[in-house]
Length: 235
Image 1 (tube, rainbow, N blue to C red):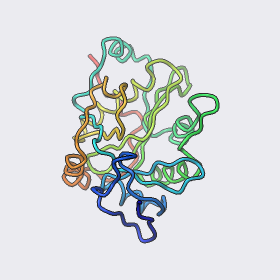
Image 2: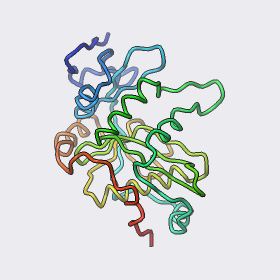
Image 3: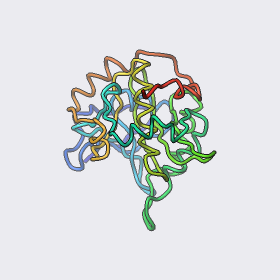
Image 4: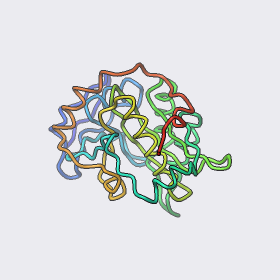
């Protein structure tokens, strides 16, 4: 059994999360900024299907990526050097989250419900949630969005309708965060795609220790400069 949450925002210790399914901690609560900030600062995130109550997770282990240690393949580096995509920050957050919410295959649903979409749009308006966008010939062809707290970026979802578009967005995000002194990118769940780019697993205890050290320090919440990625030199 997992606890049912009610106002005010409060969570049980993450050590109480289930082993199976890995990381399920609690249900209920809300998706207001107060709930989301309280969750992320403790290493907890919402993830649930349409028709389900809000479910809160804190998996163990946790997949993270050190921004300065991202692994760029030879083929991707060529794409980056040629500036095949124009990378923008925070210019079309709504379009990015809508693209991430689109079903990946016929008949498949999405966890990014209208309720989730509205919640992260509000976090974007407050300066916490950000989009990284890959553009080509005036079209949005890939990108990602996530939350920034202190010196930690919490990746949420990415999409790509052209080869290397989401990888290019992630590469620019990592290089940008490295220049800003960010400690880690939280990738949440392990995927071969992210592992291939240098992400690695750490224990939940290690992750929470990093949160305690880095999530409350750093720059003030604000939208990122739209053309900041243009300053990145891929050599």
